[in-house]
Amino acid sequence: MSSIEKIAAKKLLWAAPLAGAIAAGINSILFLIGSAIGLVDESVLVPGMNTPITIGPVIMSSFIPSLVAGLVLGVMNYFLNKPFKVFRIVALVLLILSFANPFMGIPGIPLGMGIWLNVMHVVVAGTVVYCFGRFTAKA
Image 1 (cartoon, helix red, strand yellow):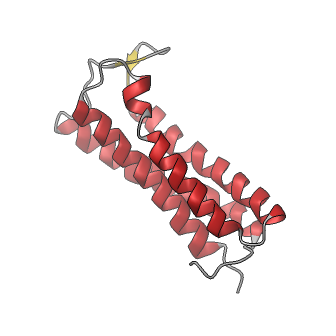
Image 2 (cartoon, rainbow, N blue to C red):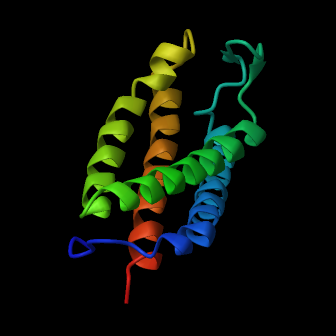
């Protein structure tokens, strides 16, 4: 994957939704497992919604960032000589920064739940980078 210079940007039109769907599917399973084993605590309320985390926001939080990532890579492809290389670096930095999100954004979140949500962040980032690298490389 590191030899990719320019990508076939039109392939992002289906690669981004595919990555989002795969990430949403995997994270839905992880959410259900986390709920079943008690890692997802229903007493923890999401600020602004005042409800526990449900599968709907998990799906949307997996799918929408994948679409945004596709847009970002498409723009990078237009302006940069090696967009995928830069994209992977940006994705890694954003992934690392996202690890603070559960702990700063959800007051009183248990450590295990925060870590479980961060595993879901890794799923989205990994799926996006894999799908974009696999399906948008120019032949």
